[in-house]
Amino acid sequence: MRSVCLVLLLAAAALAANVKLYMKDGSYQLVREYSVSGDRVRFYSVERSSWEEVPTALVDLKRTESEVSKRTAALAEEAKVLSEEDRVERQLQEEILKIPQNPGVYYLQAGQAVKIKPAESTVHTNKGRAILKAVSPIPMVSGKGTLEVPGRHSLNVIHNPQQEFYIQLSEAERFGIVKLTPRTTVREVEKITIIPISKEVVEEPTEVEVFRKQLTPDGLYKIWPMQALEPGEYAVVQYTAGKLNMQVWDFGYAPDKK
Image 1 (tube, rainbow, N blue to C red):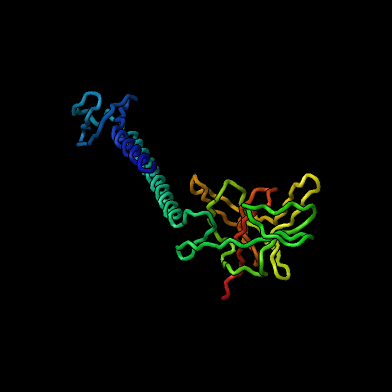
Image 2 (cartoon, rainbow, N blue to C red; image 1 turned 60 degrees about the vertical axis):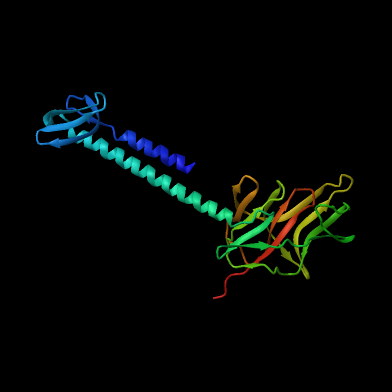
């Protein structure tokens, strides 16, 4: 697409070579080029496809040269913008190529993709604990509970408070970053309420406000926090609200020790 734009720009530049040679009476000649020699202006007429001359005294050179300068500057600025857009597009494609196509969550470290292993999450209710599996949902028991991942701290530690993550979705679902709450031996991902009779599931994660940018049509997104993260435990998540099928990729943020 950028190449097509550049070709069109070159075509426009070629047409722009035909300029208006203004006369002092307000008329003009459309010319391919012109030159001033003493008291004569020599030009190539586009209309008649021939070289012609007129007295310099009849030509409004100031107006002609001003228009040529403006047109040249406009074309140069447009070429600069297209060149910058082309550079940004190339950088984006290089960024995309670094991320594996397999569903999951990644981040770049020293230019290389690092994959975050999904955490094994469990649903904890007053009936006990059950491993959450999207392919085999747990029985819906009315009451309150929590979704948890093991350990008080993640083994995945980042040091950038606005780390960019890449998520290749396995399905068209909601996704984002949530803050986890450390407990004695686990980290709480969200609170869960299962409503009696209807068995409707109400999920209450503590969401972090993020920027989202779609990188490819097949579900590759880049997300990063709008505000710098506070030190603590977090996770990138993917889920369908009310389905209790949340996938969790946990990480901790700790500032660099200087």
